[in-house]
Length: 80
Image (cartoon, rainbow, N blue to C red):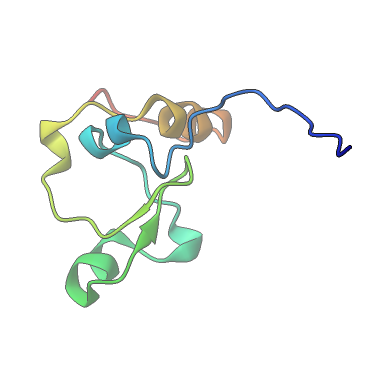
């Protein structure tokens, strides 16, 4: 008999549909938003989401995970 471990059901921010309707803060160690838009290459958000930006982020609420991560690093996060 094989021992099958259980793990908590945690939403993956890279696949969760709600993350499609949020604005994210890009982790510029992996490229910039401008590069992603111009070249069509994916960028990486602080929350781990990987995507090619194509929508106006001002139309969406700020991702709470990105916001918490940025604030923990001492960044000033403007009210969205």
